[in-house]
Length: 114
Figure (cartoon, one colour):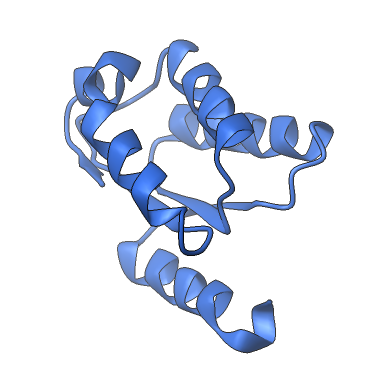
């Protein structure tokens, strides 16, 4: 998913994405990439809280956040720690480029990573 404005990340804007993830998770745990553009300097606490709820309901292989924002990176790392504390096996990582995130996601999808 590509996000260019803060309001695009808000929970009320995620219905179509969550629906697609629900369908995808029926066959295998998906990996999701959030490409957060420079127009998003920070995220509200509702965003990681919302995704913690989604990851409680659905299994994910991984979640990557692409950003150059220090505050978004901090939120993503806080989310990662929360998933660890909840005993989730989902991997969470933060990257500066979409290419890095895609390579990471491809590694997670490989049979050797299973």
